[in-house]
Length: 141
Image (cartoon, rainbow, N blue to C red; front, side, top):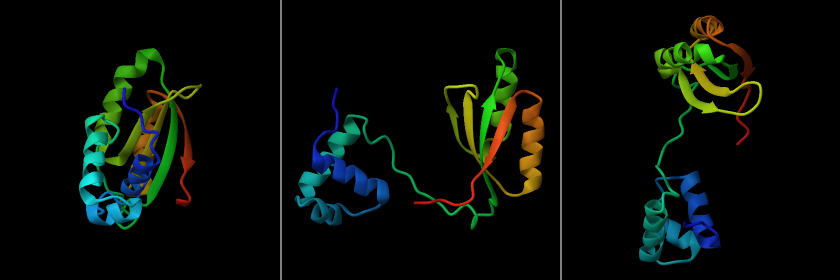
């Protein structure tokens, strides 16, 4: 199993995480290697499954998603199927969905266009699970 312990690989990952569209030549300058060496390292990290995908980060408010929340959810075993159906029905409003440990076994990161849409989701959720909402006030970094 390939693991990342090399400081240069870690720096490459850090820079790609910050800006996945960085040019290999610019990245090579930052990590003090040649562009072909950096490209080979990136390919090795991809082949090993360490770099799984490249993505973007968007400004949700500018896109019209004014209600950003985290929702901790506890679902009884007999409600799992209904819960999965609900999640699929609101997939456009759910950014990430995690299985977690503790009393609340799921964590939903949601971005809703308005309070009405969030309220609709929470009302439907209350029929299949118990939950706790945590409002996102601001992103720190």
